[in-house]
Image (cartoon, rainbow, N blue to C red; front, side, top):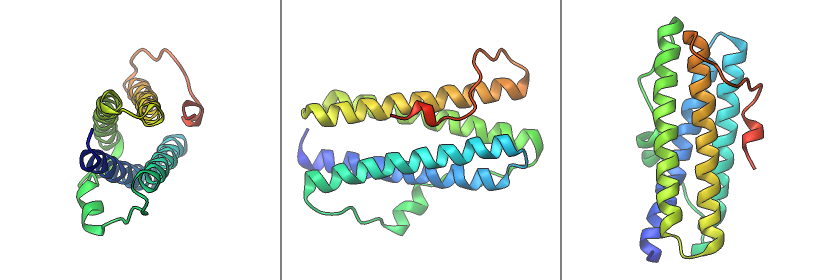
Length: 161
């Protein structure tokens, strides 16, 4: 993977994590159910950790700090989701589930391209964490719809390394 491509990949990943972090934080503030709000807030904290990990790699690889661009941040955010009862919460969960699935796929693809073993391991770890978020959100959706709920988690934090 060329340095330019790697730089672009890490930059895209940072903005995706910022977008997810802001989305989860916004949803946490709008969800009235305390448990649901807490879960979305924890997801926001997890995504902040992913952003920080990626920014650390960016600094290490390119010997400069990553500078966030407000325009890029606005473009990375999931917008126009309103929480209005169960239907709004279900829509937010569907969007979050899809975003976590795409993040998992992205990190797995980047891991396959990485030549540095540590970078490969970092991308694989992020993929695993996003898969954990996907599983958590899917379980939450199943719980809301009365579907089969095969595990019960109090927090997503244990999914993080």
